[in-house]
Length: 357
Ligand SMILES: *Cc1c(COP(=O)(O)O)cnc(C)c1O
Image (tube, rainbow, N blue to C red):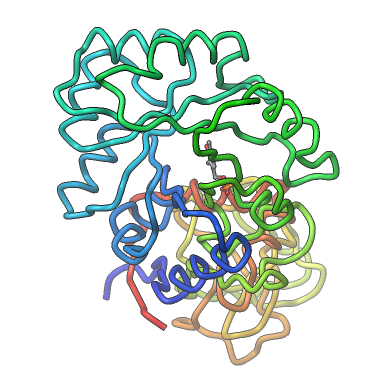
């Protein structure tokens, strides 16, 4: 028997969540964001499951190459474009569309003289101040690429900083519309939060990330209220049980001491698996189908669950860290972070299995 931890990926849930995107944005094509190993779900696995998506977005040429080598034929977009001129040839070879967020990237394309025309997305800074051209530089870029023999299509793009909170997208959308006035190119704006909340920001292409994985982009509320289904269940088992007397302490630092006589289970999951060490006593966890709490400090390979109210739990009992029965948002909230960080922190040493339904 191997170590019992596994991340179970539900392919049917991924497909279902892609259809939810279509329900929210019926007139937009979908570039599914699969950066960071498909938010921890497996780059190639997600792409294969979602072959009906109109495109995929990744960060690096390496990820794009892995997708092409796995036989993925859909359009692939590089979210940050080129990092150097030699990547222009890679973009041609792997048929990648590229974001252009600074003028130098235009010059890289033109001086590389690609043999096949490239699809580019001109990214505008509309207030997030992370990546993107100013309005002035957009016009400079267009002067160089609008009739270039090296360019196939041009798409106008921006990214919202506050689509998930009360500020919304109005300011950035107004800025975007002002900067692109009179330009008839396709538009690509919305992340998951904007897909769900702001139809006026949908444009021709949407860029769903977190919602594809069945998670909510918002700080409050559940993914379920949008009809999303969690695609990942991180599960393990109890590998030891300890009977504690009142006052007995648990784990490194002995930071938890038993309030009364109680049983605890040792779970095969630790921070080297990606479970955050910031999770303190009281983080929700499911043992033997029942919700309980973690106790003590998370160690590298193990952690502890309170079994006081679960007498039927024993060595071999199933444990759910998040996923089915326990929304990842509840764990994230208890840890003081967001679902995104928990998913991306999942370690490569955690084996994955697939279910379809
Ligand atoms: C990561 C990313 C997305 C997806 O965002 P979600 O909130 O996960 O939907 C969309 N666009 C860009 C530019 C991104 O970097």
